[in-house]
Length: 258
Image 1 (cartoon, rainbow, N blue to C red):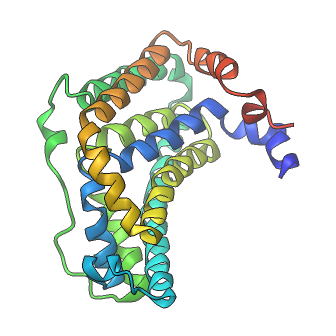
Image 2 (cartoon, rainbow, N blue to C red):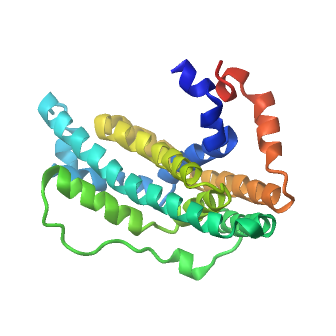
């Protein structure tokens, strides 16, 4: 593990600040008002158990195992789409490599726009329209969960849209397909971890969600400010400042393991 994180090849694939930002934005996506309240319904649908059964104190280990397996396949479904989007964005960045100085600044402006949208400062109507899959999923078990995960990714809600769009802008500017792929894998992991934890600890989730709902506006505002700042760094071509300050805030072992 130490060799993996200390290898210069890993840091050539993607930078720690970008990957850390993508992971953080993935977790933020989970906490948005368009996702968090619907999580119990998602878990109920993919597992086949009612919310009441999921919260039952008499739920046995077999039920917990089935719910977790369904959640894993759901996560794999949306992660596949997000990673493919990251690879596609990176390919676009490669094609336009000679225009990178201009592309970085344009992408920065887009990220600022998404940040303003997330913070609620502006409201762009096309981003306020939810696109959820309305068709019937005939598959059952893990296959049903996986397909629903694909549908969830394609129907990104207005809360996820600005965040995911910003990470894709970063992927475009990575310049390499592998970097963009890893960046979106980091975003997917940030979204997946709290979802899997919820599938296991559904009762704790209801306690947590009742508290976090009071802070939805603060979460959106904080996320918007982060995206605006990141966009500004891209516009002035000083994204390296993010790494500079992270190295002073976080222990060096996190950014430079070994």
